[in-house]
Every structure is written in C-alpha cells, then in structure tokens.
Length: 436
Image 1: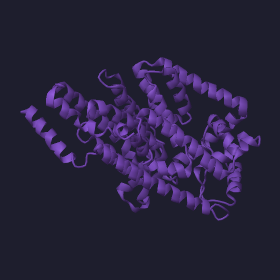
Image 2: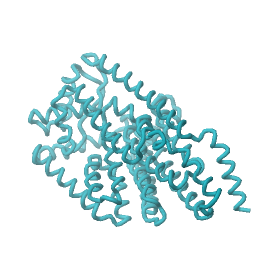
Image 3: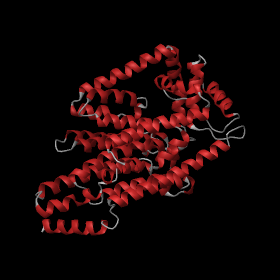
C-alpha cells in the first residue's frame, strides 16, 4: 500500500501546485514585474536621498563610512579611520551637517585598500560608482551560474537588492565572491581559493567554507585561500602601514560592545541571535541558542558534503545556506547570498526534477524578505522579523527534498510516461533558456 499511497500523494500535490507552478512565460513575467517594482522603488529612494542631501540630512548611509575611510587614507591618515570621533568628523563634513546614531569603520585594512580609490570622487558619486561596480559583478556571477534574462531579472527582485543600492553596503560584492567560489569549487580550485580569500573580507560569512572543504579533502583550495588572505594582508601593510592594523585591533573592543549592546538595531539582523536579542533575551542565552543552531548546521553541512549521492550543485546550495545560518552577525543585506544558493538549487532541479513544493518554498522565502523590509518592526508582528528563519529553513528543505528526490529516482525507472512526468516541472522552468 505504500507505493500507491505515495503515488496518490504525488498526484494530489501536483494538482494543488499546478495552478501556481510558473511556466516559462509566467516566470519571466513575474520576474520582469518584480524587477520593475524594485527598480522603481530604488529610484524613488535615490531621488529622495539626493533631494535631501545637505545640512538638514539626518540619516547617514552605510557607504558614507566607506568614503570617509577612503578619504582619510588618501589624506595620509589611514589609521585614523579606526578613531571613531575622527571618522565621524569626516562623515559630517561630507554630509554638510550632523546625523543621528553612529556609522563607524569596522572593516579590516585589507578592505580599506579596496575602497580607497572611491575617496577620489565626491560622496554621492562614489556611492553610485560603488553600487554600479559591485552590482555588475554580482549580475555577472548570476549569469554564469544560470544564463538567461529571467535569472538576471529575478536577481534584482530580492528585498536586499533595494537596501544595497540605497545603503551601498557589501552585499553584492560578498554574494558575487561566494558565488564565484562555488562555481569553481570542483573545476578550478585555485580560482575558487582566490575568490574565497577575497570573500574573507567578512570572515564570519565564510565559516562554512573551511568546514565543507575539510570534509571533502579540498586542502589545495584551503591553502590557496589562506595564501590569498596573507597576500592581501601583506599588501595592506605595505600600502597603509602596520600602524593601521594596530589601530584596527585596538578598535575591536569598541566594535564588540556595539555588536553586543542591547541598544543595537536588532531588527536589522537576520540571525537567530539577533531575533532573540530583539525579543529581549540577554547576551548569553542568545549566544547559546545561536551556538546550538550553528553547531547543528555544521553537522548537517559535513554530512551533506560527505554524501556520495549529493550532486555538486546541491552541495553548493548547501554551503551558501549554511554560510548564513552559522553566522550570528548577519544583517538584512547579507542574505543576498541565499539567492546565490537558490540558483544552484534550481539549476540542479532543472536536470533532476523538482520535488513537490520546491519552487513554492523558494517563492515564500523571497516573500519573507519583503515582509521583513516593509512591515514596521515595532508592531510586534512576527512576520516583520522572520529573516532569521530563511537560512535554516532553506537548508532543511534542500536536504529533505534531496532525500525525497533520491528516493523517487531510485523507486521510479526513468522510462516511458513516468520519466516524462518526473521531468515535467523542470521543463516548465526553462525560463532562463527559453526566453534568454
């Protein structure tokens, strides 16, 4: 009875999902419509920011901290970027007035070297140039993972896209570097190691990589990434001086107090740690709960990477999801990395067949990012702060779905009508190639 029962459940699932299952044209239309909405919203925010720039401006954008550090470096004072008072003075001079809150410089000197050329431009122009360059890099990697117009349009739908264009943070850059690393994971370990070395500019977001690489014995890639990090550090010492690194390490204590202080903007976090702090939990319980989640994620990651039946694209998606689930400090713009993981997941499902509800799960994840962005965080609505669920749930769905997909493949011979039926959802989603 197990076989017929499962067959009936599959028929029922397909009957329920078929009306909302996107065909090639429907998926392209949805991507185009969503992209248009996000771009219009982005343009609106940019116009508002441009019109309000000046002495009465009271909100400082994230990229202002980048520009201030770059400006201080060009003025021969790179180590002063880690002096929060001096750094703030440069920011206020650039804005033409004071602002509320703090926007200090937390990044290591390696990243300071990379942003220094942007100090040659005025703040607003530098912001625009930074966004154009990092966005182009991100879209280029997306196109390499899955060519076609639909994936490119869909890459501009997630809510973090708008945040990154407006705030000018590192989300495009880190997502692109992680995507480039995953693209070359098996074929070009040296290129993958170099990309991972650059992605380590935000080390807490790449913790999953050394675990995954060690689990699969990819020691060459690990060595290349370590050498890349060492080379970047050496270049920064040559260009900025060892004193800048001393100033950076001296500022870490101050940085830690900001990241652990109860007055922080916890609603901007997309981790279990941040959600618990937002709910009023103290530091130790929140860290403990995040540690349990992180260790559990690492265990599932190791098991997945060691599984001989798990396809490379599934492993790539697993690493991307785990990268976000493990880190306690994940902000809303960092979760663009989850989209990179979803691309690998969809690419695999196109050839292996989608398990029932797979696209629905990915669509709901996309919707959650917008709920988190648009709903006021102080209303007490759980929907307004659900980003912390995305990484663990996507990872769990991926692993459960892959087990289901493996079982279906082993049970059903790929012949006749069964094979055609198993491939049907995949053929519906050839949007990237059908319209590209």
